[in-house]
Length: 228
Image (cartoon, rainbow, N blue to C red; front, side, top):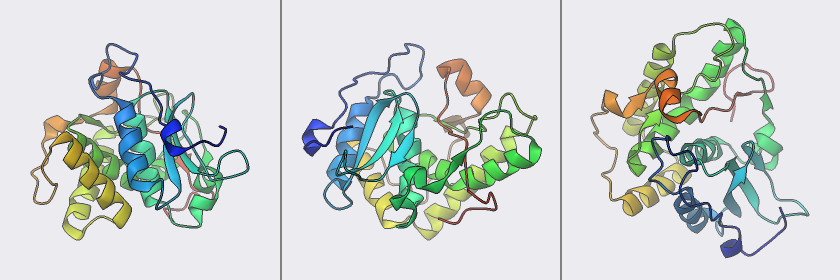
């Protein structure tokens, strides 16, 4: 995208286009504004929607801002991509898509295990953001055409990771964005929260409601754990 003033890069998408999507009452544009207010100046990073595929783009000659790009005007996609950005370290944020490579749907059991190991922490942060925004969270195994795995085990791993993060504390960028979400959506802080199972849907259940998912199939270059 062409360079622009921050106020000109807010995506004016309004409500989600799919009337059956469970989070249709939430505006992705609100996330654009909140994220950009938090990080456009301090981190030179903006949130951008209306893309066919999610991606992270470091600043270059075409745009002086780093861009966290999410799919169309999907609220959950925005939260998922923000979660990846909040985890990525300084060196990874200098690389397109943080230096990840994409392994599409259809992974075998070993590849899927690698995917889930990498995705536990981002999806835990997405879960936290979803609670702060008062929306349903949906775990994503992103492999409906591959070897069957137990999404419930992954769901439990994501929830366990979130509980650990609540206990030990979030990093500064995550905490800043959580505070912005809590203030905007008037929700309670996550400390000592009793996570409700009704707030976490399996991917199969969520696809019945939404017809889409927020996971993205990213894997590490060496696929041996998370080294952000």
